[in-house]
Amino acid sequence: MRSMTASEARQGLAELIEAAQREPVIIQRQKRNMAVVMSMAEYERLVNLNVSEFQRFCDVVGTRARDAGMTPDVLQGLLSDPD
Image (cartoon, rainbow, N blue to C red; front, side, top):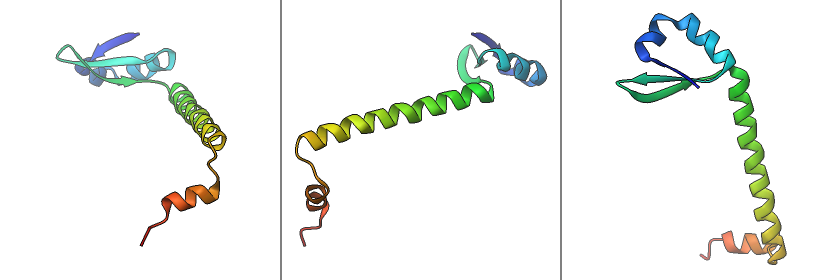
């Protein structure tokens, strides 16, 4: 993965944008990684991946809850205010 300083990124914004189309680019300030610039396609891929992973997680939890006897009525009873 390519990296550049914040000063280089400021001075060469067009180059940074072009490089980010090929691979994510790390922006460094005082030799510390501060940010990553990536293409919109890569960003959308990561967002969709996270949404898919979360949905799989929810499906597993839902299946385990159902197998343990959780029903909408049981859940409602757990969430009801006792007062």
